[in-house]
Length: 340
Image 1: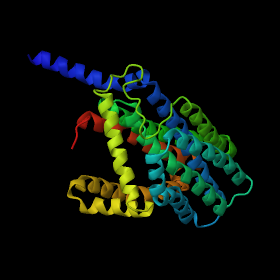
Image 2: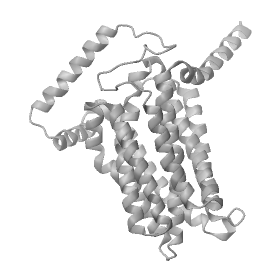
Image 3: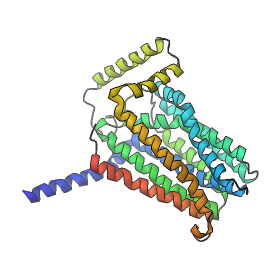
Image 4: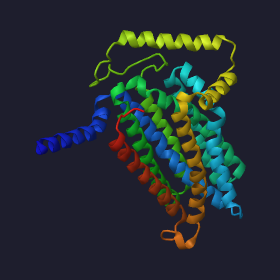
């Protein structure tokens, strides 16, 4: 009996491990969305390393402050634009939004090359703000399409894969950015970012229309069919009618956003969501200073690898990526698709 139980447990673990490549192989729509994010993130981390090198090249004694300003410019568009980007992701074709976001981002990423001839903190911040403003529209759509193209029983696998992909690109992109900045120069590093967006656009073109009411899970190669498609359609129409009714009650976009935010703090059923948001905010108090310290440490001769600042910085961020790679896999092994 003991041997049988061990065999069953081993078979279960093997099946769990194989679920990740199987989802990528069987589901062509998820595969397209997955690689679109891969290409986008690869250049983004290389861009960060090159941008921090631009800060160092300014040659003043405010490197720490300038780095903090850069990280502020990377995050503030998401904070300011999330009511608009979230609304757009809920109302319009998500594929179109992601395509437009990547197209503008590719142009902005190419414009970073100007900094190699005319280094300027103001121009750097402007470009970072513009690029991340576009990213604030891409990210909600990227997350929202997962339930549309992946069967509900495999969503936890898709989300884990996305986390692994992000951390892998942090590790690979940051290391690649460090090597390219050190050996090939800033121009190629910035152009890698632009090319990444172009490749991401190419992947997105394989997706069908992704309006909020569209569902493709269960219709792709290797996916199990949904239990009752007509019931799912009826439920989507019911939810849509509630949204339209709420919009017709005179609430502005800002009003709905403030109302939803207040609900997070007052609704007892959302306590776990509030706890999760608090954890993320508290974590930001650690991750933010750590990003600035990474740059300062990479400038310290005694901490540099082979006396190479960009390479040292790239490896520092790559190490973060390795840790983030292990985390989701370990977490999913313990918790899997358990619900709370």
